[in-house]
Length: 457
Ligand SMILES: [Zn+2]
Image 1 (cartoon, rainbow, N blue to C red):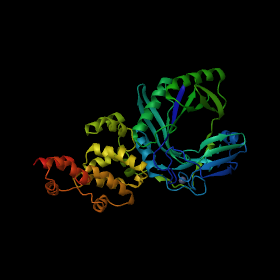
Image 2: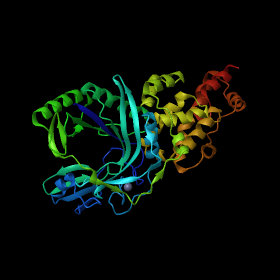
Image 3: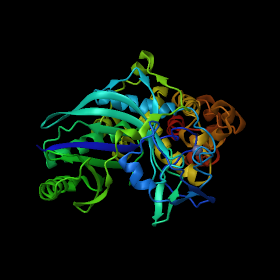
Image 4: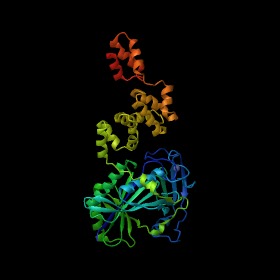
């Protein structure tokens, strides 16, 4: 009987799972290289399972290229893991809710033995967060068996018989692992299910975007043992991959204990035996997490599709171009927060998507600006204490930690009151030239529309 399930790994946005480093996928030049050998590893029960035996038979040396910008002593396994990233945990809870899954009362991190060197510790930390969910598809519900939070491995650079080289930057980035029940009917259904889950992840705004941030593995069995297929590159190829695998299994059968295979184009190649259960044992450096009702309630937010977001933004007066950009941006949550300042939506959208980006290019540390500072700035703008052209001047000084009011005072950016503008107008007897002159000398303190109105008085 045909059975098929999907396993989706998606990198989450924000800091790493057990330290404060961040890696957004952009590789930097290495600062140094660490070299290690993996001690022979066995499970706590003393069993050496098939997968471990297979790899540890090769006595290999591992090299890790480290970059101080996105890795620290935790990745180097010189320091124990720090507190679990609350953002990553919250993200998994929001997604678990969206996938109708039941969150466990207590969450325990486990160590999954990894002996190929892609983890400096020799294991990957993983925690089961939720179970028994489902997603609606055109062919009915597909069960979501489990949702886990885990750390990404180090990226491979080069592999030879005796040595492997990895990059440390990716190690420890939080991943959500979503495993469906083996309820996928056929290849087209696999494609649809993977696309639906992928869309939900993107719409949440909680995940990293771009090449390599999502991985889909497939489990296929045609009656006997299970085969795990790794390395699906293109969801459009899923139907073909599944067809090929089904006919291959019928022809060749499946090795006892199951197989892990790598997809190349649409055919699969044998990698190693399927890992057994002896690979997991408790992580003693990380405390169990209690999932209380307050935490769960807080994370029951609805995930809005990017189409819905775009309509919402257009209705609020955001231009089509910015609405489309914002709807698929992780800054959407920030926009939603700032809109309560009562400032106009277009100005908020343009500021976070354009002004802050151009300031970053000018080497201004915009990441140090807090959402509270932005909120206060937009409140001042909404109540006409400052004009639009002056916003950027305030933004430039916010990374210092000063409040917008302090910056406005220091840099004389207060908007002139109508009485003050009237007084200014009297300085220019030639009314035709007045507007240009006033805008040239006081553009940071006056609103052009207001000046024109007062000139007509
Ligand atoms: Zn780190």
